[in-house]
Image (cartoon, rainbow, N blue to C red):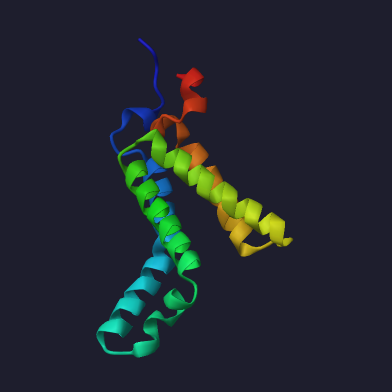
Length: 135
């Protein structure tokens, strides 16, 4: 019989729960913005969709990234490796974007590094492929 750590035996893994919460917090601002946009359009403000109309490709890409954050948070909650891989890709691209802009010392970079660390801490419970040899 193989010994398991306490967090591998429990049904409620705090590392997975924290990683999932962090993913939901990462997309909370965009979800709030979409909610405000929907409320503005429902109350009859004609200029509410002007940003979406002005740059439709950028808006579609932003919505795609938001959908990836939501999918990642959902998959992490289900303890699927796909959620962890999507999250690592999103946070890695955020970190690379900040480095490309020359803003490596910024709040966004710190957020990305924290996200990568939290996903890696939950990696064994998520079943990430590079933790498979440790089982």
